[in-house]
Amino acid sequence: MRTCFIEISYQVRTNTVSLKYADKRHPCWPFQTGCPTSGFLNLQKRRIVAFSCSCQRPGGEAEKHKQPLRLRTDDVFPGNNELHAQRLERSNANVHNSFVSAIGPNGGRDEQTVAGLHNDDVHAGNGLPTSAYVHLPFCKRRCFYCDFAIVAIGQRNDANSTNIDSTMGSYVTTLCKEITSTLSQLPQASPLKTLFFGGGTPSLLPPQYLSRIVDTLDQHCGFQCDAEISMEMDPGTFDKQTLKQFLGLGVNRVSLGVQSFNEDFLKACGRSHGLQDVYEALDIITGLNVSNWSLDLISSLPHQTLEHWEECLREAIGLSPAHVSVYDLQIEEGTKFGVWYKPGHHPLPDEDKSASFYRLASSLLREAGYEHYEISNYAKPGFQCRHNMVYWKNQPYYGFGLGATSYFNGKRFSRPRKLKGYADFVELCINQSSDNFSANEEYLSFYSNTVESVEDRVCDTIMLSLRLASGLNLNELSKNFGHELRVHICKSFLPFINSGHAVAVDSKFKTVPPDTFSTALSEQSASKVLKDVIFIRLTDPDGFLLSNEIISSLFTDLPIK
Image 1 (cartoon, rainbow, N blue to C red):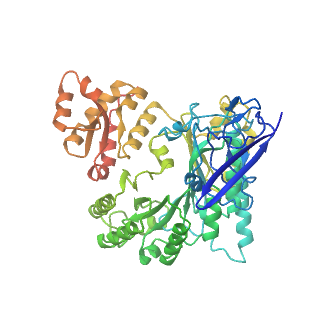
Image 2 (tube, rainbow, N blue to C red):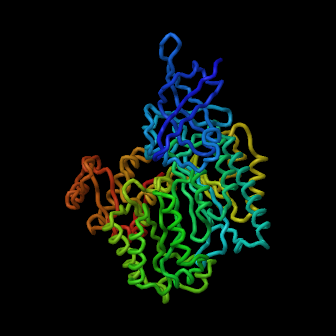
Image 3 (tube, helix red, strand yellow):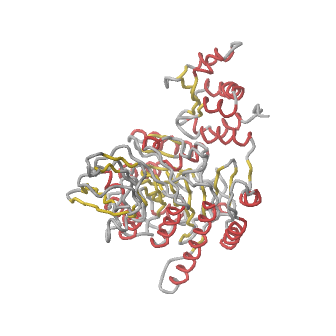
């Protein structure tokens, strides 16, 4: 078999980069100048990329090869591994009929056309997830409101640096074992469309450790060509060089935990960063041309006024992030805030004031061009968080790491929240593993805490869908759970539609007038209106503010057998 050389030329700003690569396994005739590529994936460090080619036989006959060529970018850009996928998006390469190659543990390939990459259903045709959450638990210290599974490591210095590195390295080793153990049990893991590094403070993890995690995922499932790879980062935990390395590893979405633009509120929350750290972090992000970045804010903080909150929102809008997450402070048991404060009592805002904070955020951010696409999230067009949409659409996903939760095969998997317990858990998973994951009931029974009932799935679908601006898809509800439930839900929504807290939307995406909806439901046969009404959604902001009460009402007397 002869060696095939494939050449790709594309422009990165004013520079032209040419690539020649040989793979003796590729069943192609010798390289022909100008051989067109039919598509390629992100040329990034440690990514397996793939493309098909069309080369001329010596006699002039064209032969097309649908089998992708495997290529590692360490060979492509020696010394320039920080090249980011966004550069390819600006290239002038001739791309058509793209293929995605998922290189599994046994070298198998799962090809899909690029058209399928933008499907809202972020899971594979085999029912396996194509999204993963990876928990990186390390923080400088625990914030006063936080009840997440974290490991406080303190401020890094010469005295404790070795111990911190040892703790992080040991955790990453265990984490990679879990990833390998889980994915190697699957018949063929599908390439990831979304990956989210959460915490904790993932930006505290040295890039070489993140590289090990990415490589492990790459080896066992791979990534789609337009995979969204998000990373939570805190101000004061990274510099320009560190972020460049994260971007070089494939991170293409940054979620910055600002929380407040008020120094006093940052201190009152126990945050480890100050306002100067915030602006330095923003300078680094914008200086590296990261276009897809999000900013997190918290409202209803102790002693916070509406004026304080408006200043914070306007500052955020002025910075023009692609995405803004706005969370109302929740007082959790076991936290310092849980000891110090009682919800609704001074110095915390009461319910009316908290509602005013929510209304103000919705108003100002929508006026600034942000879409309020989920109860707590706003995005410029095209910048919704694809990974979080997986949760809200109740789709399957992997979870790896301390305290992380997975959801697939109708089961929710929850891991221990302490390092020792998590390490023991992973070792037991490895010992219980078998070559037939789906048939290994002993492994599955250990690995999951909850097998969802039909009622659980109905409740999750309703609750999560109503968080979205698009609302509850009644066609999908009927398809998955039957027509009777659709009728029940429509009737249950009637008082909230009449009160203006919800709206019905027809197949033409037009609002169904409350009178029309009410009259149709009161008739002996409501089949027509039920056929025409495709979505029911909560109004913004009034319906979102009443979402808990509305959802609780819907769960009463569900017709589930």
